[in-house]
Image (cartoon, rainbow, N blue to C red; front, side, top):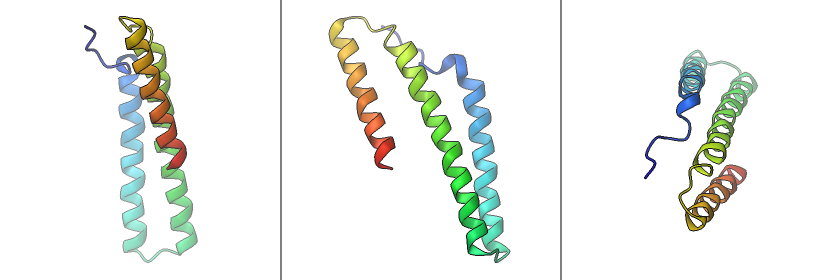
Length: 94
């Protein structure tokens, strides 16, 4: 049984991206504290959202490349594809 996460080869890149997002969100809090103009805050929210979407796409790509390649059986491969399809649907709805 394969237990290593599919994103292991990109773990540092993912962590770096998430730290950047964390900084962006802290910046959003600061903007609100400073009574910044709404449109400027919305622009920064958009940037944070896009950064999270990039992390999600990277994770999805790693899942497809790694987890499907290591599927033990056709049933396991179908299960992994179903998981990926459901994850894509959640991303599209959000």
